[in-house]
Every structure is written in structure tokens, then in C-alpha cells.
Amino acid sequence: MSTSTLTRRADYPGLLTPQGEPWHYLDTAATAQKPQGVIEAMARALGPDYATVHRGVYARSAEMTLAYEAARGRVAGFLGGREEEVVFTRGATEAINLVAQSWGLANLKAGDRVLLSVLEHHSNIVPWQMLRERTGIEIDVCPLTEGGCIDLDAAGAMLTPAHRLVALAHVSNVLGSVLEVRRAADLAHSVGALLLVDGCQAAPRLAVDVAALDCDFYVFSAHKLYGPTGIGVLWARAEILDAMPPWQGGGSMIDRVTFERTTWAPPPQRFEAGTPAIAEAIPLHAAIDYVEAVGLDAIHAHETALVCQLRGGLSRINSVRLFGPEESAGIVSFALDGIHPHDLGTILDEGNVAIRVGHHCAQPLMDHLGVPATARASFGIYSDENDIAALLAGIERTQRIFG
Ligand SMILES: Cc1ncc(COP(=O)(O)O)c(C=O)c1O
Image (cartoon, rainbow, N blue to C red):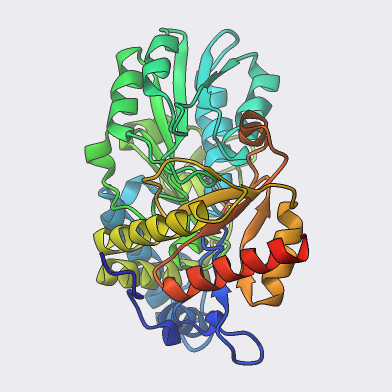
């Protein structure tokens, strides 16, 4: 399988250092670099096209409203859902908090249970702990298989009719392991629970079809999908969203306001209080166009080939500990004996190689792995063999420095 780049690196102004040298950016799981088309879409949205949405009677505002709602339609098409099922949020974190505070507060009570897994990002742990404080729900934690996947056999054995929600990552941001979402949905539904899927790392790497996956909530952040920061998506099944109360009050989310009583707008507006992220929604549309033009199957195959190449290279270096499964989706975590990941990250940076080091907002997973931190290389559309070569050379240099 070829690992040459899938796209022109020149499309990405962020892939150069200030001196104009190639920057080996291996931190796409944290946030993706932006293609020129997305940057231009944002500049147009903030510049000649700019106006508010949903309010103005003047033509520019009406056009902006159409563009904003077209972005919602584009997201719906991307996920295989319906337009009215797509709520724009600030990001995946806000989307999960929305579900916890709206659906969770309305539907869960003391003694109800939520099932998470060991590998969840803090964004899919802390909102449920905050809900536990307010409602008295219980949180259970599904273990991992030896290979670092969420152990769905164990999940099946743990689930009871007291479970009302199962909330799991589609792709682990540390291990790159991929969840069998359909099976998780079947397990959750078999006890009457709903399934929330944290798709932050999956949406940029795997084709997603919420109907085929049969999940109930799906969330992702635009900035990991080659789009802008400040916008993300909650997709929820229409009948669930329809029954959910608002979680923030303000303009745009109402039907009629009097001092005595306010009635709510239907979804998705009910969940979008205030002026929305207009100038972010439009470049998100451009980002989805870009990603789909390259093709998610091609992106997945490209990243899988790079993972295979990097894992092969790392396993030939002495004193490297590799985490996660062989068939990781675009993400490789590792540790070097006797060298702190932060030292490695600093030395790599001197050679224009950017990786992520630390706990990756997954401290329970670090505890499970028995390390305080790992080094993580993560790939994107624009990654290639040169990035891997630069990383491996930087690791060898670091090992020489540390003797
Ligand atoms: C698996 C996963 N879930 C949730 C998040 C949170 O995303 P955001 O910070 O964009 O809200 C991330 C970000 O790293 C992630 O990787």
C-alpha cells in the first residue's frame, strides 16, 4: 500500500515552519491543519459575505442564513442523519455536556447507571461525573482487551436494565483502537439503554453512517476534521432530541417569550441559544467537501498504511514500548525506556517534528497502562513517509543524547 501523501501539502500553509522549512506535523489527533479552501471559506464568511443569521430582513443576512443552514444539511449528509437532528455546539466537549445536562437531567435519577470505558477522553468522563453529583447516578467502567480495544464481551456482561446510557469513543485518541459501534449499539439497546458515540477521532478517519451504526447520539469537533475551532456537532435521533429540554436560554431558542412563560423552538434551534458560530459553520461545510472529495476510505487506508510503517520502524528501535492495537486508526502511542516523553517532544521539536506528549486528557487510561504519559504520533490526510523518517531519526538522536 502506498504511503505517499494523499493531497498536496502545499494546500496547507500550516505545514511550513516560519523559515519556510517542512514541518513534520504529527499531532493531527489534537487538531488538524487547515487546507487553503477552508481558510478561504472562513475569510469570505468573515469578510465580504458576513452578516448575522436568522434575524435580518436584508439580503446579505438571508444569504448568510441559507449558507449557515446549508452547512447543517452538509453535516447531516456527512453523518447519514437528518438536518433537524444536527445541533451545532462549540465542539464535542460541549455536545457531550449538552446531552448530560439536557437529556441526562431530564431522564436519569439516583440508581440509574451509565457505562463508560477505561479509554475515554476526559470529555466523556467528567460531564457524567458532574451529572452523578446532581442526580445520584452510578458510573461503570468497561475494561479493555489486551490489544487496547473496548471489551464488548465485558460490556455485555456488565450491562443491566439499570443502565440508561452507554457512552464510548468510536476511536481512542491515545491507542487508535476502533469500536465496533453496531455491536455496542445492539448491546446497549438490548437492556433499554441509549448509545452515545464520541466520534472526535473517527469522523476525520472513517466513513460514518449513524443509521447503519444504530447509535442514538454522535458527537465530533470540526477542528479535528480540517475545519475551524469553535464549532462541533451533536447529532441525536429526532425523537430523542424532540423530547429533550433546552439547556441554555436566550435568543433564537424560543418560540414565544413573556415574563410569565416562555415556549421553546423545535430542535435544533432549541439547543442553539444566542448568535451561533456563523463564520465557523461555513468553513466546516468546506472542510466536509474537502474530506469527502479525498474520500474517507482513501484517508483510512492511507493512515492505516502510515501506522503500519511507523509501528514497524518503532519496533526496530531498542527500548520502545508500543501501546494499542496493530490496526490502529491513524494514531500511535509509545514510550521510550528511561526518557520522559516531554524530553522526547522537546528534542523532536528542534528537528521540526511535532508530536503530542502527556496524558492526552485520558488519565484513567494512563493509570491503566501504568505510565504517567506517552508520546503520541497521529496522522492526517497530508502525512507521509518523510514525517515518519523525521520522527524515527529524531527518536534515535534523542536516545544518543540520553546515552
Ligand atoms: C476522543 C476525544 N473526545 C473528545 C475530545 C474533545 O474534543 P474538543 O476539545 O474539540 O471538544 C477529544 C479531543 O482531543 C478527543 O480526542
